[in-house]
Amino acid sequence: MTDELATGRTYPAKVLLYGEHTLLRGGRGLAVPYPRYALRWATGDPDPRLASFADFLGESVADLIDADRFREEVSDGLRLAGNIPTGYGLGSSGAVCAAVWDRYARPGVDRDRPTRKLRADLARLEAYFHGSSSGTDPLISFLNHPLLLSGGGNAGAVKLPAGWARGFFLIDTGMERSAAPLINRFLEAYARAPEPIREGWQAPADRAIEALIQGDREGLYRATARISGFQRLHFSHFIPEAWRDRWNGGENYRLKLCGAGGGGMVLGLARDPEATGRALGEELDWLG
Figure 1: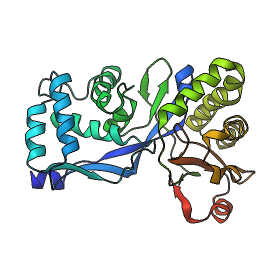
Figure 2: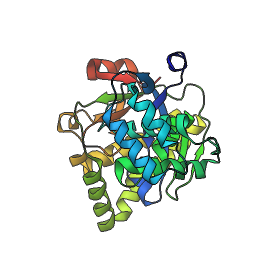
Figure 3: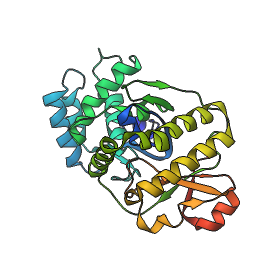
Figure 4: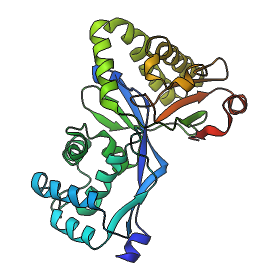
């Protein structure tokens, strides 16, 4: 097992570039794996959290997962090591599920089944962590490929142009957050006034996705600036207070929510990376 683990694959975090919240109301989303943060199988002291997960899988997902072997290997010291922070919207539980699926899916189960079915199966695993799951985060981690998401529950691999990550960066706010209250507040706001959110957030997100796929950098920046401005004006309570005054970088950069908001990571797009670095300091984690 030691040799196998030394050469084994990693299971990356995910970054939702566009579609935060608006996916829940029919918009599109674009998510990418982010290998700077990842998990891998390792050996060490037994992890009681994995043992508890194995118990859940044995009770609820035994048709897909060999929970007995999982439980046995965990008791022998198999564990997941890595650096994906929890409470940041980077898909830490999704990476756990991807790793377990890859190693413990039963021999008769097609690990590479069609995307829609695979997503549904992975959602059954991730339900342990969230009560319910779309299956998107573990799907991205398992496939290690950008995915185009739709509000209707579809997810398909998408090819992005070379250099697509240029100008994108993450900022660590240093704050964990709980997504559920923020999601509920968004849904309440949408129920009260859907049209402004569709025009100021959802439609620009769709345009940004299309511009990124097509390699239209100017259109991408304009659409991102529209999302950024709308979030700052109407959803400032989703933005960590320390970053509100630096949200609008004018012609140099724009910031937007990364996932639910409220903490975790903030996503930025720089038109002028050097000026952005001077303005925001060494806190930037460039995607490309």
